[in-house]
Length: 153
Image 1 (cartoon, rainbow, N blue to C red):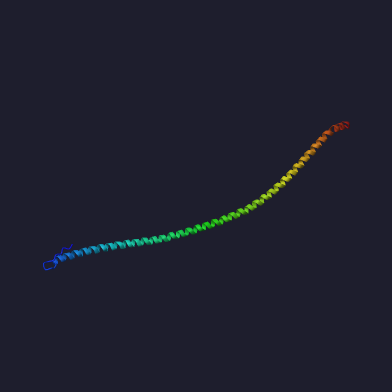
Image 2: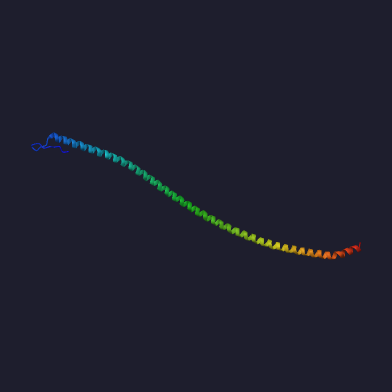
């Protein structure tokens, strides 16, 4: 890289120095241009990343809000379901009491009907028994009635 040669007097050749300085200058300018391009590229990337970051922040806010609303909605649904379940249980207990009361009433009526039916059955059996006794007695008296009717005709 260093092509500078000293002359006999210990000094450098001006043309060689100028060439070297021109080369250093060109290399330096090339390096500056590359750094400038890299800086521009990095700034553009930085702008894009900032834009994406802001978008992600907005999305995060939206998602967090959606989660919060979902949690609130879920909590509301759970609360309403619990209240509805309590209401259904209370209604069922009330209906259970009504049904038990009605069943007890029906049972009492059934017992009365059974008792009345048994009374009717006994009365019918008694009446049948009395009828049989009358028929029996009638069959015993019949020959006498026939005789009596035959003598009075």
